[in-house]
Image: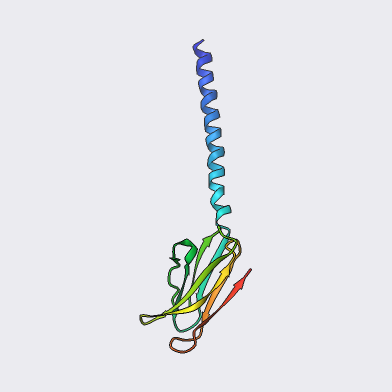
Length: 125
């Protein structure tokens, strides 16, 4: 009798471990599906640049210094506005905005100069 109880406990523990492993696998797979889009800002002008996401409570990317890029990974909206800013020596310049699809890869490239004619381009793939 004691042996049957011990075998049932082992079976129950093995079953619980298998269930936990399955749930753990599914939970770890979920973030990969949620973060399918990548939004990047690359500063190619003589100034730093960054992006602001109004639908996300004005969440901003890290500042990309001139000659570098920064990226964020999202995946929630099929259409979302993104504000583009340039910054140099304490001067902040609004360059404009575009709507992006978070499920695709979007790259904002800032160009030109501050002062002067700062501008940006958007590539989606």
